[in-house]
Image (cartoon, rainbow, N blue to C red; front, side, top):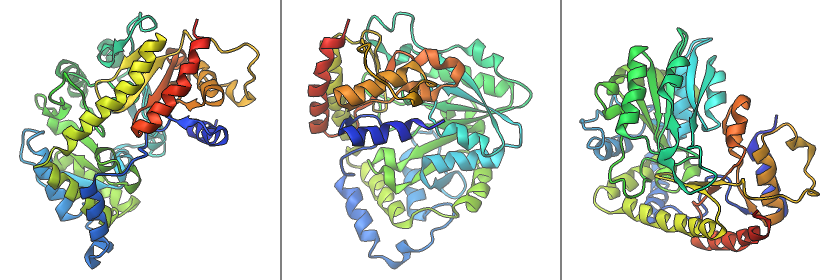
Length: 407
């Protein structure tokens, strides 16, 4: 079955649609980061193999930046591992921990790469959905209103369960799990001796009224069983550089490190220097606050339009996606769809029509559910607002055409 990107990315190019589907930026990283990358190319050592754990400058910058956030002094030698993007870091974690038949609990909707990363390492994904409130089709809701049923989570645990994957801020919902929710998840992990893989790649992007990002590794004694995933690409608008990291206790990180040395050995050296420069600068300059302010404005460009159209949506607490409820949109009955969509969720046809007819590409979130739960995503479409204001304003003009089709 073709993955969602192989359908919608070519379709957006073919139709010249504005692509608000994939979550990559169409603007440059901060100047301090760009300049550091250029400078690194002039340094001989920065163009050669790096230490498999990551370049010392970057590990030290990560320790300095994150120690306060983790309420502990992080050891850059044993508790931080630089990875070839967050995705490879997760792959290495699964490779380091999973044996054939081990089960990994994933919350739906999930980042699509989790599943092949698990199965390629012999594991079996087990799914538990986050659910919106019953009236999500009638009003604007907060991402915080999407809830995990802890009893349902407990019911998914078996003797074969090895790990729980958590994603906060969540893609595509934008949910930031609060401390009570994190503690409840952590208690399930503790009661069943499970490792927690906490995907926090959007940790620098959360919105008021939140003034602090809650981390599961900071709750009770959960540091001892948690590996936290971070992303230089998401933090500095440089997703193609493939620089990420893992943070956690030595007794967990060492297994991911052992696997990583067999996967990539080391990570892109010049870009590690650049990300280190960004983190160092962010210790004294408001890089991340400025980024939050900019994304709040971008978010408002789309949300204002959806308000005008009276289309309900999920207002994100973090990350850069808006989930729009499409149940009020009526696609013309004579519109023809390709056969490839017949075996996909209903949201695929909505997003196909939006791309081809309206000229704005969104992503159908059923791609991030197991088939049994596709109906949960039937009336949603994910719009990414990690684009320039100009592109977002152009998308707004096209989306205004939806007025004719809203019932």
